[in-house]
Length: 433
Length: 191
Image (cartoon, chains in turn red, blue):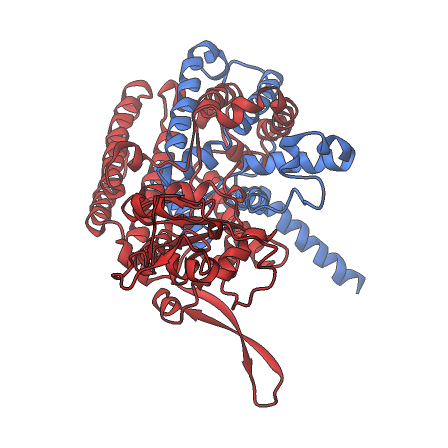
């Protein structure tokens, strides 16, 4: 199975089941919060006077458990982490907003979701907090324009996770966070004993067994590690609709699911020079020509508007490719023939970069298609695999005529369409923001 | 027939009363509740790719109200335009069913454990009115901050914390930092 399930990634009226699923998640959420005692503001406020650390215990147990299970599922390859919503980092608005929330917490005695559990069980203060919330959210909507630039840009790092910040593996971080959480629980219980005069011998023994179990699971996550790029590549699947002829001669379409290797062997991801060229003039897509050759070859001849990212540097720009460009961006990997471009394509798709294709026949085929009559380009008698098959008297880059063929001269071109635009899941549709 | 209908009505009334007059049960142990919450959060990630949250729904319900009362105002406000305006339905987001689900879930837990009661939870040394005013004010402040930080304790601290989101951990520290810094000065409210 490939989680998260595609059908549930966004709520829509077209799929009413999504309301049920998210509603059920909400019910479980509200139920647990009420059961933990978060409908009572005193229990929440006690946290800040060290009398009772229920908030810390519930929250950090939840984080540690969810963290361990999530990264365990990612490591086993069940859950695709690139499809999990990770809150983008905005340090400026995050820190200021967080401090303001802290003020609201100690003054109001609730946080938004606990106020729901409180209001729904008849607590008047919970209802008023909820009502105040509507006013606060409204005020933010009305005042956001005065600091719009700061709100959207101050300390913006995009999708950034702590393992990237500290340069350790997610598994190691899971173990560290679980350990810190267990230490906090121990410290918290001592504080409760001192400030809250609580008798710790009344606490269930089972909690120690739970702590050991959680720690062992965290170690398991570390041992499993992250799925290798090869694993992720093997697990990919692509959908293609194809017209088939049935016995009664009626045209029919079927949807087929292919693995990544089948996409290559059936040449479904190779876009012809004609199609790649036409893509520049289509409204619905925005092609990005990723030239993965060496800088030397790139300087000799390259397509107009193509970007040079040598194959060994491609992995480093993948995060940018995942987040920066518009959803209708189509990436076309280009090498002299196809060898390097196929490697680049494998890396791109394994990293879940959407709409990745390969220029069929590479630069050599491109020149044969658009620059065959250019006297400045002399074909070589022989050339190695994935080498330029033309002789270039000077490194003119994209100043050959065939680098940006005239759309008027090539109004009519025959080609088999391979590009199937797949709109990326809108990640701004996730999260609380 | 009439007698049967009345009998039925009485059973319904009794059932309704029984919801509100159950013996109050103790709260679950924090570690147990936390572990269950962690599993719920994990299932949310596994099934939908989204975590938990609620403050976003408050914003969206606001956007719906503004869009109903003054649609032209939405068109002049880029922040509201992300949620409403044009053919957008502000309620078409995963967080809205989670919000209403959480209200229902809290109610069900309260009913099952005998905690449905029209009352006010407050510190011993303040009046109900002070507590009500402070709860309202706290709600205004909290949600203002939550929208600024793009998520509250659920959407940022809990869900972001579990996905190792760097900004969410910073926000979590800021929330607790803000509350601890101010706690001493408002101790009259709670102690």
